[in-house]
Amino acid sequence: MVRKRSPLIYTLMGYALLCATIMAIAVALSFGFSLIPLYPISEDQFARWWTWAACTPALFWFVINKRPRASRNGIFWRTLAGLLVAHIVCFAWVFHAVGRWRMAWTPMTVPVEAYLMFVVLDWTRRHLGERHESRHL
Image (cartoon, rainbow, N blue to C red; front, side):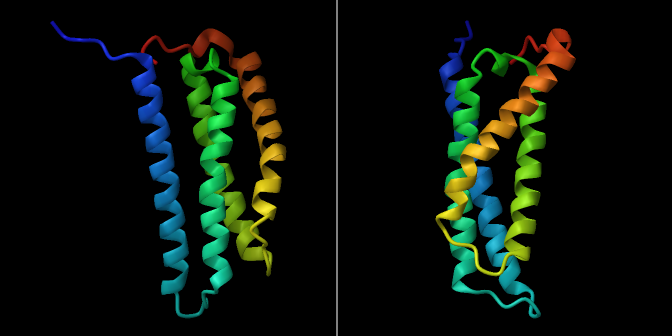
């Protein structure tokens, strides 16, 4: 007889995978920029990405925990993945465009981003609804 795993295990594994992915992206981006000879790396570059890597899991954890019923819907996870990609691209662009980005500025963006994520997630739920409900999640 196969023992079923509890949903809590899957949730914790998902959080661990999200954190590991975000940390790997931060390390790759911070070291990747240092390998480009025309792009000098600064101490501030590491601080930007490490602050981002610390705030991003907290942001997504907050959003996921505020929508526990939606986490059973497959469109919720696809939308969240798209928001993560947008989050990465936007911060990469901001970090490249802004000359001096203070470490305290990244946590200040979290409430605004969380609000925008809730707006997008609610819009997709209203417009796509339960048609995309997954029974396997």
